[in-house]
Length: 153
Length: 297
Image 1 (tube, each protein chain N blue to C red):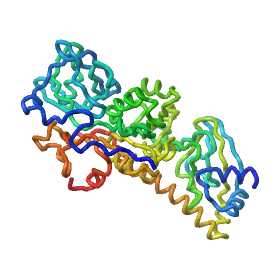
Image 2 (image 1 turned 180 degrees about the horizontal axis):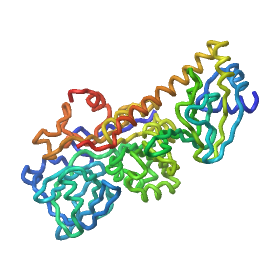
Image 3 (image 1 turned 30 degrees about the vertical axis):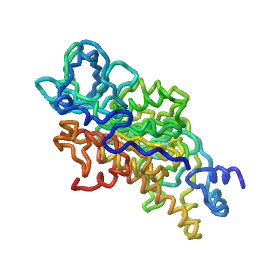
Image 4 (image 1 turned 90 degrees about the horizontal axis):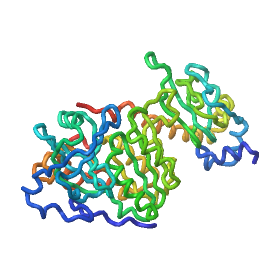
């Protein structure tokens, strides 16, 4: 097992993934480090990769007309970042920048999609894990939209 | 698997005699208290510190219980006690949202208010001994949980990991900011704060409080959880705690309803088969989870 496979196997998002699937995945992976304030991607750009955070914190943000850049969510150690790479037209819905120096593993979208199509069992496993992340993000968004802390007279 | 002791029977606060022993006249009569200090916490919340008029100790209370505070000539409202149980001063934090709280926020040190109480069921600090404790607070819901945290910290050695997860709307809405900073510096208390919405100048977590639960350092099968905040936040937090593996019987929530008499006479705070003032405000989650998601309740 190479060091990337090792890092991937220890990351909560890929915990329990079969060794042959980890090997497939590591073929698409590289390590990345970004400084605080540095953007990983910007809204509207092609989504060419997704990331798993090893150490640090990343803010997911969007530009609004009145407030400028608004942070919608932060992700940190053990989280996965980005699912726009999964669905056409493969463009980022939000931007993301590092809040502090952050180390991540970047996974090439075309490479992972190709392996998903070639090996449906691997593809299903990846989709299943992303579906869980998307469901919990959707639930969190519902809660945010309800603005539960606002007092209603 | 270790177990948590059964909570006290509904309607009977642990460690205190049932209030049924007091006559109706007694429990409806406010005791005069003088404001020692009133300070603004955030743009719409404030804390009032009270001492009994004429000296003497405050009525004994337990974290999680509430008092009815009377602004004379205006009205009476229920407010949870948010101070230190070991302090001789009675402390309440609330949001200025209605006629009574707005009038109260304009009072000054030396002014007099009426106090009835304490009422209701407390947080399960006794039952939680020997366990990890996850405290999940949303917005002003941190106030009733602060007194529980004082209790946990006063006997810190009796508990496992203690974790506070606090979510609020924006960095400007963070309650007890200095205290949170002090607690965060402790080695025996894990504090995580998140806001629903942040600007780039905020370097902390952004996201709803439920997103803090999956990574919080407690052992789910051994943990006792206490939740207070808006009802929707309580429901989602309860679900997330259960997803993490905390049993519903170990999750406690503080409910809020339109409490008037505070002793179960008037029925204003009826919540399914319960009167929140008398049978709550602290309930075991499995008692109320089903009711909280019913439209007709």
